[in-house]
Length: 425
Ligand SMILES: Cc1ncc(COP(=O)(O)O)c(C=O)c1O
Image (cartoon, rainbow, N blue to C red; front, top):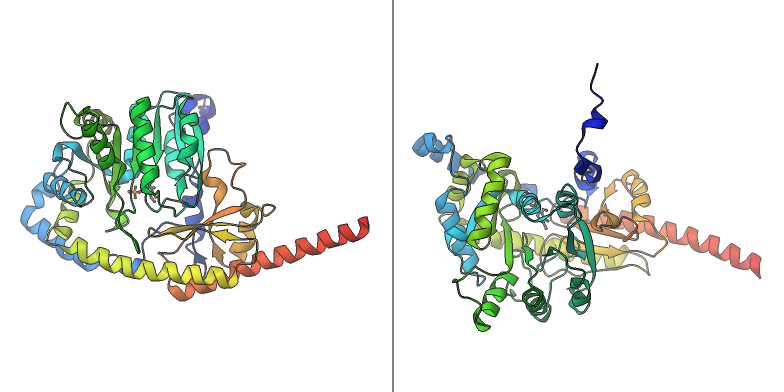
C-alpha cells in the first residue's frame, strides 16, 4: 500500500508555505524583466575576485581545517571580528556572546525553536519581514501586530499590545524590511523601557544597519538595553545578560551566497541556541566562514561598505526621483535613509497582488505588500520596491512602467466612477 503522505504530515506543516519572494525570484530571472522584488545586492559588486584569492589561500594554507568538521559556535577569529565590528555601534559583546548561523534566516528559525510553543504570540511590526513569519509559522506561532508609520513601529500603541502577553517582540529598527523606515531614538528607548517593565524580550534583526546613506547611526536596542540595565542596577551579571537577542548577517554587506549570519545574546541564550543548531546542521560551513574571514580581515569590509553606500544611495535617489515623476497622485512612499527597500502605497481600491500579473506582462516585478502582514487581508494596496539590484536606468524604466500601469488603472476607475455618478444623477 502506498503512503498517503497528507495524513502523515505533522500539524506544523499546515501553516507552512513557500515564500512568495522566492517563488517570484524564479520568474524574475527572465533577462528582460526589471525586478524590484528580491532583496539582492548588486551582482557586479559581489567581491568574486577577492573570494577567489581568499579561497586559494585557505585551501593551500589551511585546507584540512577548512574541509573538516568545526565548532558549532563558528570560526573563532570570525566571531572576534564580529565583536569588534559591533563594538563600533556600541555593542560591547565578548566572543562568548556571539555564534554563527547559516544566514540570519537560520537564527530566526532557531529562535522559533527555542522560544515558541504552539499558539504562543509573537509581537511584530506591521508590516514585518516575511521570512520571520515563514520561520515562525512552522512553530505554530500566533501574532500580535502593532502598526507602523513612516518612522517605524508606533511605540505609543505598544503597551496595550504587550498586555496580551507576547512571548517576545520582533523589531527591525534600521531601514526596515519591507518599510524602509528607521526607528527614532525616543521609540527605541520606549521599546527598551517597556521590554524591561514587562520582562518581554526583544529580537532585534539588523541586516541593513551598516548601509546608511544619510544621517547619523542610532544606537541599537541591544546597546540601549545594556545601558538601561546598568542605570537601573539590574546588571548584576555583567554585560549581555539583558533582554535583547541581536541578529546580524554578512548577506547584504559581503555576499549572501556565503550564508553567514550571527546571533549576539546573553551566554545562557547562546548555549540553548547552539543546542538547537546542533540538531539542525551541526555547524555552518567552516570553509565559508574561513573564506569570509580571509576576505575581510585586513580592512576590506570598510572599503566595500563605502562603495555599497555610494552605489545604493545613488540608486535610492534614482528610484525616489522616478516615483515622483511617474507615480500618479494618490500614491505615497517612504524615503529610506539606508537599506535596500522602500514601501509604496497606492489607492485603497488597487490590489497589488492582483496587479502583479499585469506588471510582469509589462516586464516589471515587485513584492505585493500583503506578504508582509500576518493577516493576508491587510496591506493589499501596498508594495515593496528594492533599489539595490537593478541598474539606475532600469530603475527609472521599471518605475515608469509601474507608474504607467497605475495611471491606466486609475483613469479606467475614474471613468467607471464617472459613468456611475452620471447615471445616478
Ligand atoms: C530582515 C531580514 N532578516 C533576515 C534576513 C535573512 O538574511 P540572511 O539569511 O541572508 O542572513 C533578511 C534577508 O533579506 C532580512 O531582510
